[in-house]
Image 1 (cartoon, helix red, strand yellow):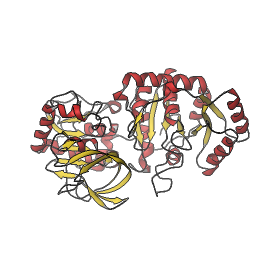
Image 2 (cartoon, rainbow, N blue to C red):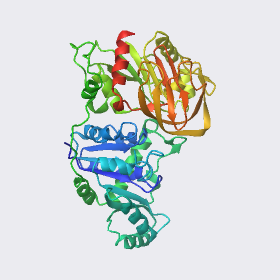
Image 3 (cartoon, one colour):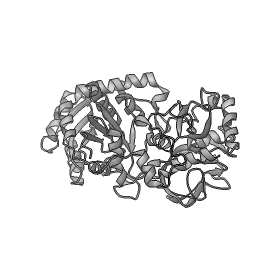
Image 4 (cartoon, one colour):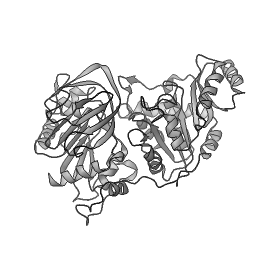
Length: 475
C-alpha cells in the first residue's frame, strides 16, 4: 500500500503553464529538503528530464494507454518509494485522452487511478471574471475528479489578481498560487516540443532554478503540501521488474546460479556481473528518449546495461552483446553522427553478426542508409529525411513475425511522434501491423534487428526484455 502524499498538476489546455508549475513545485519542495518523486502523464520523454533536474530522481511516465490502467498505481508506487511527496504533471487538457477512447489516458483518468487531488493551472492572461466559469466547469464536469485548488498563471498586475480572486471567491475552489509573467522560466522549443535537458544543461539548470523561485514566491507551499497529504491510500504492491518478469515468463532463468543485478531508481547498471551479457544503450544529446523501466527490466533479466554516446564514443562498450537505440533527435545531430564513422561501422558489424538490435524512431533513422543526405549506419536499406508533417498518436499494433523483441502475434500498444519519413516505410519482414488509426505495416525485422517508429513501454509486456537478453546469450 502506498500513502505517499501526491498532487496532479493539470490545466484546461496545453500551453497553460503545467510544466513550469509542476517543475517549479518539484524543485521548490526539493529545496525544502523533501524527497520528491517526479511523474509525467502520457508518453512524453522531454518533460521528465526537467523533472529529474528539479528533484535529483528519475522522471517517470504514467500512461494508461501504453501500460493499461491497472499498472498506473503500481508504477507510481514503484517510482515514489522512499519519497516524502510526489508531483504528477498532466498532459494536454485535464480531460483530453486517447482519441476516440473516452477518458482513457487523460490526466483526469490518471488522477482517479491515483486517488490524487488536482491542482488546476489556469492561463489568466486574457480573462478576469470568466475565470470563475472556467474553473466551475472543470471542477463539476466529473465528480470523481477532485480539483483541490487553482494556480493562476500569467497574471498581469495586482489589479488583475484582485479581479481574478474576487471572481473565484464563490467557486468553492481555493486559489493556491498566483504567478506573474516571467520570461526567465521559458524553455526553448522546436519541431517536437521543448529542447531536452541533455542539449542545454546549463541553461536548463538556470531555468529550473527560476521556476522554483517563481513558484516559491507565488504559491502557498504549505497549503499545497496539505492538499497532497489528503490523497487517498493506494492498495496493492509497487511494480517490481523481477516480479514482472516472473509473472510474464514462469520458466526458470537461463543461468539461475547468477545473481540478477537490480537497477537503482532507473539508473544504468554497470560492472555488476562480468558474466552478464552487455546491453549497450544509446544515450547523449542525440538519443534522450527512454523509459526508466526498460533498463530495470533488462537488469532484472540478467543484463549489464551500459550507456554510450554516439556523438562522442567511437566504439561500442566492451563486450557488447546487444544494442538498444531509442528515441531522440538524430535529425538535429545528423552531421556529427555521420562524422563518427568508426561507430557507424561498429554498429553495422554488430548487426551483420546477428546480434540483437532494437531501434525505436530515432534509432530507426540512425540505422538507415542515410538521414537528410548524410550517411548513417546502413543496417536498414532505407533513406530517412525531415518532413513538414507531424506524425503523432497512440497506436494499436501486432507483431507480424518473430523478432528479438516479440513472438509473432504479440499485441502491443505504442506511440508515434516524429517529423521524419523513412522510405520505404517497411521492409520485406515488417515489424508491426497497425490497426489504428489506419491499417498499415511498418518497420523492419531482419536477422537480429528490430527497427520501427513505434515507441513502446516494456512494463506492459515485460517478456520483451527477457526475450532480448536471452537472444544476447544465444546469438
